[in-house]
Length: 612
Image 1 (tube, rainbow, N blue to C red):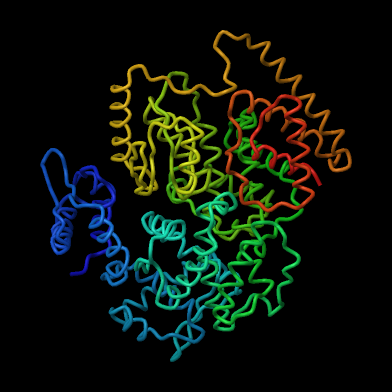
Image 2: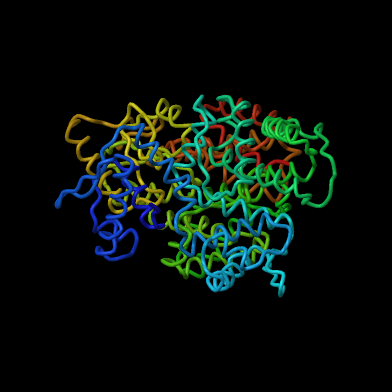
């Protein structure tokens, strides 16, 4: 039997969560009546019965399934593989398949062909094509219609690829990401998954994944975020599919490998060479730039110190709120824009599960940030506008909503596949809903063990079903009310079982009896000392117009170090460095150590932004 799109998602929810789910909560999640959910559950129960999995139901408790991990994983693989691909497609699924089909085709495709492939009527396809046209328009791609020939996409090769990687990446489920990362980082064999790929894309993806698995070592986790590796596989898949069709990005210029000597580039080169050698395809210059994300950069020359201030000032004026009084906002926004516009690796495809919610709930803020970016950043350079704007909006929302708790809390770690901005909003939301928890960090699957060693972690909140000695709560990418309640119950249980629990205090945190005046004086003097030392050591590298911004940044860095509020330790981990930058970091590190200011590597990387 085949499940509908909603029935499929309900079945996945039942398998992924180990807590009972109430019909009322499911109706709220899917915005349908409880009667509709009950009807869907009849089909879901029949499907589980065929898999020999029992679905339990109690009036005051909810629904849940019982099976061992092997059966659970097998059922999930089937739901996310053949079942998902073969299900009776609703309009959203049809549109996605039509988009993939048109992307892969060099010739026109008729409505009759699409209708036959998707097993729907020709009139249904004709109606769908209007939505297809609207879907690709923001990506500067046109849907060409030709009588008696059919449809095809017209647009720049880069735009076509960026659109397809965005479509595939944003449709990956958490379980699929978890499965891919597990296969890459462990000795687990291949499992059948199709997600949003037809046979051509899937076969190439498997080749790329196999070679990535061979090259993977624990050191790679320090060079790439988890999301970077997934995106690298998707881009490599798209690249080789297009190369086999003769579709290159601006010609056949061969890559000069001697130009790239940093660790990130060398790893990508090794991966590309292995894959392209097997498929007998050339190693081209622009294909390498496409994989790294560098080819889509067109924001060079922007002074981000000035631009960050201009964006904050513009939004403050429009919102009637002086955001410039929050120094954390400047630092976080500056760091985000540095990664987004100055980094040459994986900076094009933005994914933000809160994008639609933010745009709907905060339309005025969204509009004001959009205007600020159009004026000061040149928004036309950013293809995925909504995701980019919403990620900036997260920083303003966090600035507005952030509160500083003082009482002892359960220490939580959030494991996700999203960017820092999204994780930070989730941290704010969870801490706001549950007063007795503090999210001490957020990371990808690859960094869980390292962070658990470095921080005192009492509870792991994860979008993936990971294994750990520490209690794990599996939640949705956007935590639902049910997820919040599950976290709250675990926190209550932990506080009850550990009445003498006291969380580790940050290394630099001072007691409440310390004189504030003395603390302020110490930080001001230390800031001046550091600025003076850096100004002398890098006299030729600091532009005159950047000195004031550097001094301001150093003062805030000392403040962050003092109160243990430094930049995320993995914020810049995958940014490639030149030999000079390595040398500059060494000089800065020795200097700060001599001045008895302890900072993380991410803080040193941020200082490089001010040097030539």
